[in-house]
Length: 312
Image 1 (cartoon, helix red, strand yellow):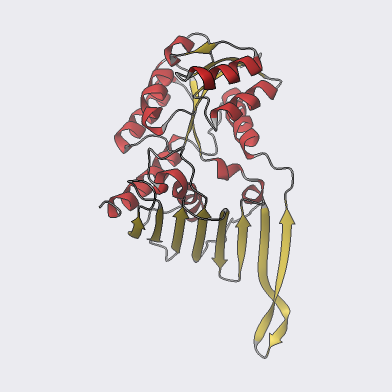
Image 2 (spheres, rainbow, N blue to C red):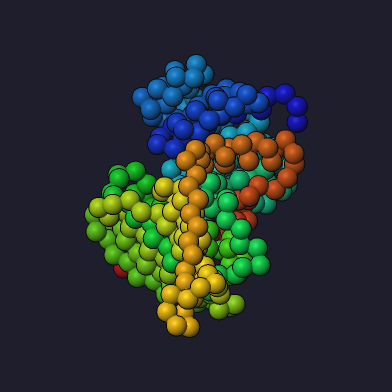
């Protein structure tokens, strides 16, 4: 594809307005419109970038090449379905949909109409994680903590689909297996749905992942620790810090090797810009995105299994 990509954003809430900013900043893209039924929210973004505000995503058909769908999760399927059916490339925020049948249909529609479907699992583009090389280093044990203070947005889904799904996607991409056993517990605190949850995932190859997510914490923490046969790795997503810990040549106690730590800090990482650059590059180059529809479905399938154990 030559020339500028005509791009739009559906949903101008917390994430959608940032999507609009990124498209407007890319020299090979043209932000042509934003869509939102909320007049005030949509008008602020539209006026900022000097583009029309629409109240129906179907008005984009024939006018755009690529769209970010950042509407509430319950609307992902309907909006993305209409866009893909018209051959529009879509970057849909996570989770891909609310059901596996809906996800399967979107994947099939993308294939049938030659459209690209990318899912917005933003942490995959965190600079610290992208620098991590896990080739031929399967983790033995994974510990994840994703904690955040309560925010009224995204309460249309549980903490599993809101926050934990980030780490589920990362774990599945690293282990590259489907869990053979899942044990999960969770409780509602401020909403009618689960606000804090813990899940233990056991994989056929022996890896075990322990995942905790909370949206009622007093602090912000987004960390993954990977324990390997010879050392462990810590990824701090919040501060974009990657730390490797490995045995050294000396001993700190008789028969016990010293631990050597190497830390890398990525100060200028912009995960959303990296994600959108990947989306537009995949469109131009005809390649599969880092997080395609199948990856989004895989994360959703595990999240649904966890959620079923948390029903009250």
